[in-house]
Image 1 (cartoon, one colour):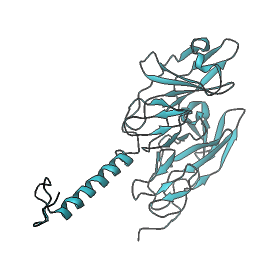
Image 2 (image 1 turned 90 degrees about the horizontal axis):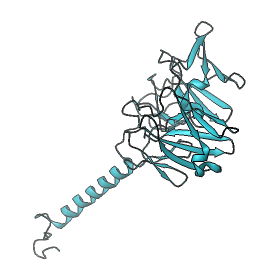
Image 3 (image 1 turned 120 degrees about the horizontal axis):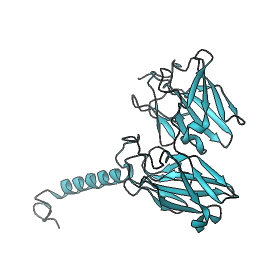
Image 4 (image 1 turned 90 degrees about the vertical axis):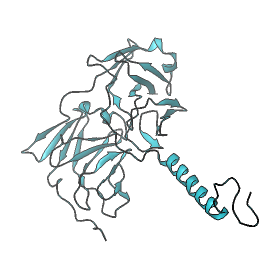
Length: 286
């Protein structure tokens, strides 16, 4: 209530009504922005602990009735104490996912046909791909071998070998897909150059299709990071889609796509990286 004579709001700390309403509106907007944007941190804040031991894991399907049909999923605690989900994505295809949110390490929960982080609101599909809410990386996935005759699932530990091997005097990278868990699902993205001076990302754009991209921002040559199933340049804020197209932020051209040859029989992708460390002269700051 406001005093008719002074225009001051009783119970508003002595502020006049206009000032009180203005400050209350600003506080409400700030609260809504904080709720919508989470912490604003996109990259994982620390390396994620492994939920699969070095010896791997084995599960009997008979112990998990929910996995008898496609679309079924269960959550389990592994030998390391880490939370994991097993998902039957098709009749003969299974996905194993760490339930540790890549944003800040919270355990995600099952929500509908996917997963949800109760800490900052990140959402993930049944195959672990980030789909909305607090932007972050995809859930960590692990290679799964399904033995239909034995009725078992064998989950492999993350490969310790280098995901890519330089060949042809350094002008090409040979990526062994089995060594890159992030590429086990469509939509997966991984840096595969071994942190060299020519940063290269590989994207699984379809079941048997891969796109290789230079991770040099075309604006001023900074190395972009993988964030929420896309790319972000922390230097000036340019953001790019999973296939390298510029989306928002600092205007520039798209990321440079590199020639890539997928060999299904060998499970490899050969990437030609000549020139991947140069910029393409996109638009500059104004």
